[in-house]
Length: 359
Ligand code: NAD
Ligand code: ZN
Image 1 (cartoon, rainbow, N blue to C red):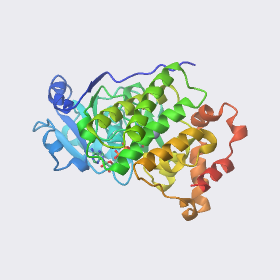
Image 2: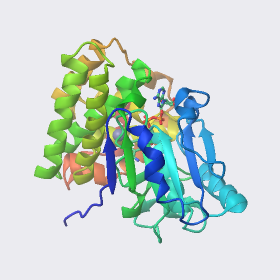
Image 3: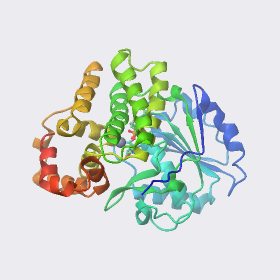
Image 4: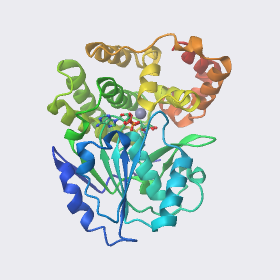
């Protein structure tokens, strides 16, 4: 079966492009109840960027703390209910922040027009109606959430995205100036998410010329940023990373992620670990699956003096390890891609538990 994917409608890229937002939004202001909802990472509260948000008096600007938990279904439902009750349907929603805020903006855009709890729509093509206009402004690069067709939410039962064509942003503003303030460890972990997206996209049955072209370019950029250039977060590297993040996301969209992401979902769901960090924790032990990639990732971390903790599994209970393995096992599309359609003959819950015990 051929995948038929929707891309972002419009993208503006370049230093200072954040300033384009006011004119971009102008033509949308007449829609619905003539106000915008801005969801902004609380890191920016009181910072210079907050004063540059082109909000009018009728708009709602909501600063959201994305630490320590990833976005939840409750969080989306409550915010949607509150805004609809107090002001009605917005003209659009603008997300300014990292993957967490990108997902919140995408999810709430859909939930403004789809009734009931967002838990009803976790999965592929369960959303019934298009959402409202939504614009994403990433401020940390790597997850590819700015380009993906999913809005990952943690609910009472599952950590799973609202995934459909309407999830994809109508507009994205890629301004590399905005990622300059990211601390070095997060710069590494989120960048490694891009790297892992590409390695996993490339190493599996769904890899194809289209996904390969994006992965190849994104990997080249990752190597330039994290290996060749030792100077770290320079303006030039910020530009490259923003583009790599998007291309990594496009690569996996047209292919699939693999073993590392399956394990990472278990770490996030059961232990609450953040996506990119969880990926790094898992990937360092996946030599059997991605030998060269693992060696290269370790080299990148070393180059920037970031060390990953070891022997974590000693602090985990058997129940936690079993629960994580079950979460990972229940992502058949990832195993299918990474191992092949006969993956169940090669990978069992016990195999996966052993992988967690390496961590
Ligand atoms: P994040 O949004 O969770 O933010 C990580 C940290 O960086 C936070 O502390 C935040 O305040 C801080 N931060 C963000 N921008 C900053 C800046 N410019 N300067 C200083 N600090 C800054 O980070 P993330 O890793 O991009 O996103 C993780 C989330 O993305 C998870 O919830 C995960 O489930 C989701 N995700 C989604 C997709 C998708 O396709 N939708 C893909 C991968 C991950
Ligand atoms: Zn990822």
